[in-house]
Amino acid sequence: MASPSGTSPSPSEPASVDEAPIFHVDLDAFFASVEILDDPTLVGRPVAVGGAGDRGVIASASYEARRYGVRSAMATVVARRRCPGLVILPGRFDRYDEYSRRFHQIVLDLTPVVEPLGLDEVFADVSSLRRLDVRPVVAARELRSRIRSELSIDAGIGVARNKLFAKLASKRSKPQVVDGRVRPGEGVVYVSPELERQWLDELPVRALWGVGPATAERLGRLGVVSVRDLARVDESTLRSHFGRAMGHALAEMAQGRDERAVEADRAAKSIGSEETYAVSLTDDEHIAREARRHGAIVGRALRGSDQVARTVSVTLRFDDMSATGRSQTLPFGVDDDEAIGDVASALVATIERRGAIRLLGVGASTLSAREGSQLQLSFELGGTGVVEDSRGHQARRAVLNDTIDDLRRRFGRSAIGSGLDLGPDGLRVSTQRGDHAFGPGGDSDTQRP
DNA sequence: TCTGGGGTCCTAGGACCC
DNA sequence: TCTGGGGTCCTAGGACCC
Image (cartoon, rainbow, N blue to C red; front, side):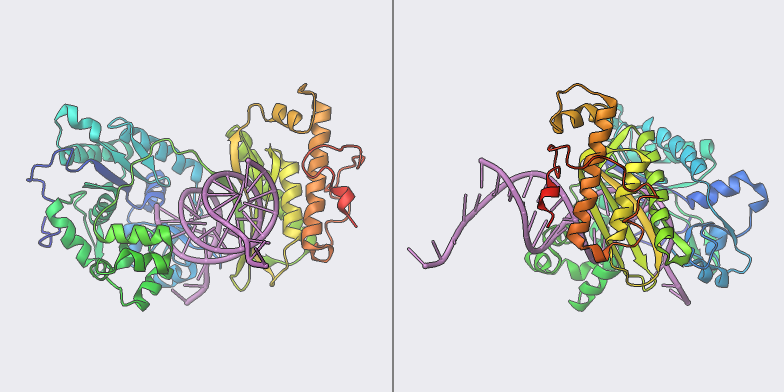
């Protein structure tokens, strides 16, 4: 296949695993591809997965749809305008999960060091192939054909010295839309060390990992548009403008350096559920109910993964697109709908509204394995260490109620929506207050004026 | 043209502890 | 008189990624 000089893979060049130990593997148009596989009548039609409503966004677009300029992250109303015949599907994430697991397993058959990024991408460290004397480009081609034969989905694979170049290479390996036509990709692209500098110099800073619209804009104001420009700025300057971590990362990437390891088995750090409403919320009771509903979804997810969360957070986005949040860390982990819902609805009630609410979300973090959390609570609350269900429950309830009282105090009663003071929605649970002088917040009553 | 839902990471200030 | 220094935890906000 014809390729622009300097950007073609160099399959004929020998590359040992030591020269190019990192793969970035990325499935093409993943969600849309799964939908087309499951419904052959969609073959050849422009297909997208995403929200169909006025506030929807495209999550994935088939190449047929991309011919019309449809892209992921594009507002659905825009996509429809560009492509009136666009088939928009809501998405079936359980199904994508199945495909994703199979995809991961195929890569895991090659190397155990696999780091997923979302459902359709992984980094893989293939250093372990050294013993087998396999050239990485050859291994990548075999991997690609296995993915294609077992999943019926194409993948692009970047092969390089580090994550930075592997990711840039996989992007170049993809099919491209040129003049309304889809040009097949090369599938596997290897960046040789000799090509690295040339690649970087051609790139806009926006192509670098971690450089989004805001950072690109700020760099532009410093006269930095390309990575070539960026390479001329010293690190201390970058740190002073962008902070320690970002400044360092920018300086490193501009030189083609990237020491990040491929990390397998990264545990999730938070679980959340959020929703953008077709019609923004204004009613206090409705808002509290939604906080509880999302809290219950989070609770189910926690229980499903045998985890408890100590931190409950809420996020609101208003009609002006501004967003704000509140979070509260409890002295013990929770995984039940009621506890999460109580804290979430109380948190939401403390937020001063800047208008109608278009998005409401509930999150859980500071996660730990569920086992033993009840016992731990019993100790923390000054118990004997003997776990007794009713007592444990009552003590948790008491701490939870105190926590909610603390929120009122911190943010002022007036900030609390009318939905909170009353009992009927079950927010306040009848517990004799003052009969427990233990636990964090347990003596907060005495501080109340 | 108007911006989803799942997440991760970073920063900064205050509280608190030694 | 003026008044530490570092570490950790918590919270709010923001940018970014897929």
